[in-house]
Length: 270
View 1: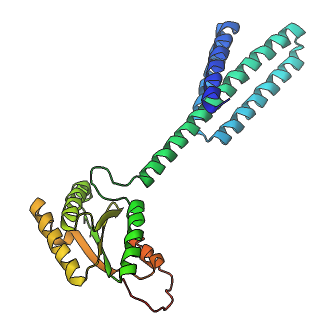
View 2: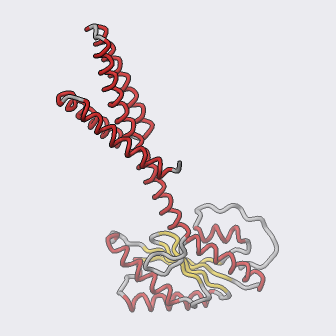
View 3: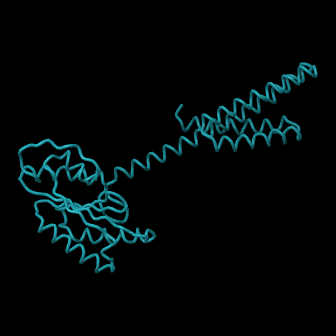
């Protein structure tokens, strides 16, 4: 039986058990049991599944010991004992099925969050911006890096960092302006524009030099200021030459604060 079928089976059993409990218990006992179950249900919704299970078992044991003491003290006869055992069984059944239902819902919620996270991680473009995600940027950058290395070309990474400086409320709007200007500044189908974080844009320029980077930055500032009068103190620009080794180039793109010590080797620095 798959998980969906198990969930519906548990839900139907929970509904049937509640109907049976409502038909078997007198109004006063049903009211007391209902209030106790509502409190228990709220605890199960709030607590983690394992903690909720522990609370539920402790509650069953406490009620069971309480009824056992009452039966011993009042000398209940067998019909009364049988009736109380049946009522206790229904209470345990409904509460246990509710715990299973909550467990199913929480697992469904976790699976949905994981799926959304995986989808966001592996999609190629950021929503409404046209920028490459970091994963897709790295995937394409590796191919470009290999091609530049083979052709003995030089490549550069430009990092544009947005500094809201107390204007975080406008970060989304600023990001749209910066993204549009960056995409218009580079060579389409040749250079890459991606997003490292909500405040960092990446531009990978292949087969160029420092003068080419300066030209791209000039176009970027022109497009940016044409869209909005953004003060220069609201962003910072960093230009880095890509290392020859892809391992270290990847560290540069990711923006790792500490890079491993690169071994000295002969070759062309990209």
